[in-house]
Length: 172
Image (cartoon, rainbow, N blue to C red; front, side):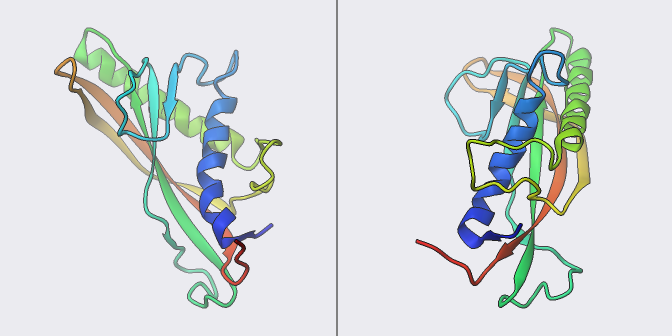
């Protein structure tokens, strides 16, 4: 199903969050994750382990037939970065835990890609993404917590989500 421009630009974030939240259940890959945030700019305290979901700019998907013709279905690609943070008194151990969490986030995305659906939100079709591909693993990042003046090791994993939208179908 191809979405209108408005729904198509909003739906990926909702779908990606549903994929992660599905794994926060008991026995899930992210059962231990206490916080999933959709922004890194927040004053609210973050309970660890945590995953910050950062949506990067959406661009046209290269290599698709007709991808530059806006009178037809347009395939877009939105990279999502998942910044994974776990705390440990030993910095090396915290870095290893963050990398492990990043791999579990990646597995969660791949396990739930186009399977998990939020039935309460009709703006997300059951098979939104035509492709999800691995982009980058950043194993040695860091997060600074201003109130504590601490630097906590973090790892990020980035996936590209490709999906179609209809440019000509626009609603108010």
